[in-house]
Length: 143
Image 1 (cartoon, one colour):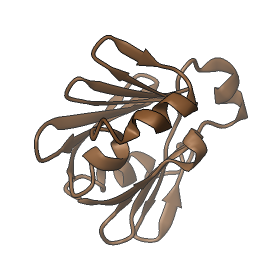
Image 2 (tube, helix red, strand yellow):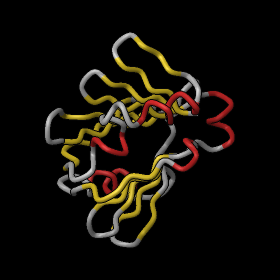
Image 3 (cartoon, one colour):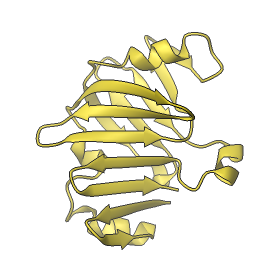
Image 4 (spheres, one colour):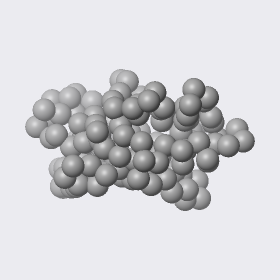
């Protein structure tokens, strides 16, 4: 489930998010298209991504361990070179974003590299939220 938070207004159901998506243009699907990924920060048990957008910088925090495809090779947290692959996305420009049934986030970069965030079964049991997107005053939460 994805929730969108604007200022102090909280939306918790998928129905509400879809109804208001046209009103708020800063959802992840709109905000980071053509944005450059400028940072990847590893913080204890999560990863933060910084995007330079046209109007505001945006941040995506992944509490679920993301998968990354770089130069046609997919990396998971267990793989050697995983952190290097995530950092290899820095300076790349976002071409498209897909949020399939609000169950996952797939960010595609120009050149076919990808960042994919979807919790596994264990993460679904222990995480309250698996990703948070912030752009300006808008927060989008996946749980």
